[in-house]
Length: 201
Image (cartoon, rainbow, N blue to C red):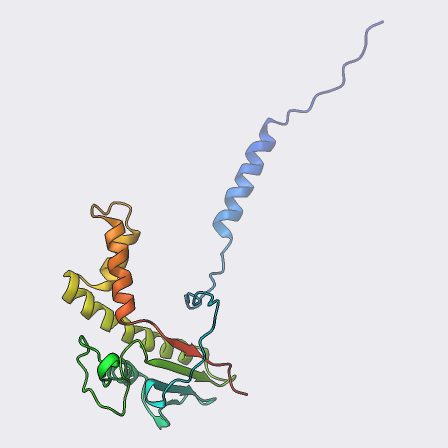
């Protein structure tokens, strides 16, 4: 007796339909992009050094709940913050071991001794507008970048920004080991000491 064969279903077109649906969803779906600030955390210190920061080596920046910028207790426009931070970092008011040979500031004894001692302290209110907070961050980072660019141009004939681009460039023809050391030298001259305190209530 002959066995009846089960009817077969042609599933060849199912793969085409699935592929078309996949393409449709890839084209029509929007992917949300998260925005934020890139920050590198400081390395872990085995033995924390005890000591206080001199008041003159501390540059206080505060954002209140109304989005107003206070620098050293006085109101300031955001577009003037970068220049004020540069003047503080590049002051070079120290003497002896604290002297700064490469600083081009006014060398006031009432301001920072040298860039290695200078700390920018940023305080913000919990109700601070996020866009204003980002704008202040950008101005402070731009101050460090400007000073690093100046020293990199003086020592190595190119800006610090260009040196970092070259380090990431896979087609860079120079010696990346030397380039990395040169970048560290510039970062040592103007270390980014930006302290962010816990937001105020």
